[in-house]
Length: 113
Image 1 (cartoon, rainbow, N blue to C red):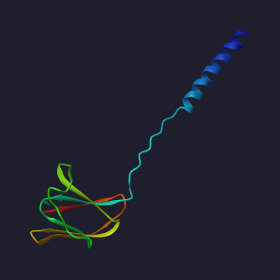
Image 2 (cartoon, one colour; image 1 turned 45 degrees about the vertical axis):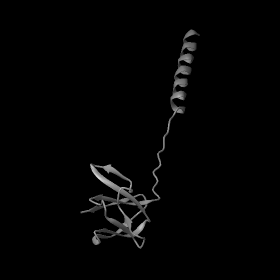
Image 3 (cartoon, one colour; image 1 turned 45 degrees about the horizontal axis):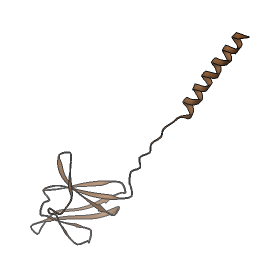
Image 4 (tube, rainbow, N blue to C red; image 1 turned 60 degrees about the horizontal axis):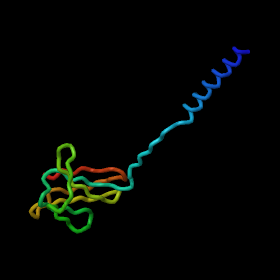
């Protein structure tokens, strides 16, 4: 009888550990906001003007929020997803004229020389 009780006890303990191991779990989900599209300006854009589609020009000065990405200063602008026309003017001259197709959740880098 003693052997039978020991075996039952061992099976009970193993079953308990199995149940504890299978029922405890942790799951973390990070969701990225992929409903927006962006144009990232890099290069020498200080004092230039940016025009996105037919919107009025934006003067790129100290009032524009920038950040450093891969050692470069970057200015980030939200655009509508789809086809966008990006124009950058410096001293009145058109230096960038790009037609870009940007999908939701993506960014397109435009280098201003």
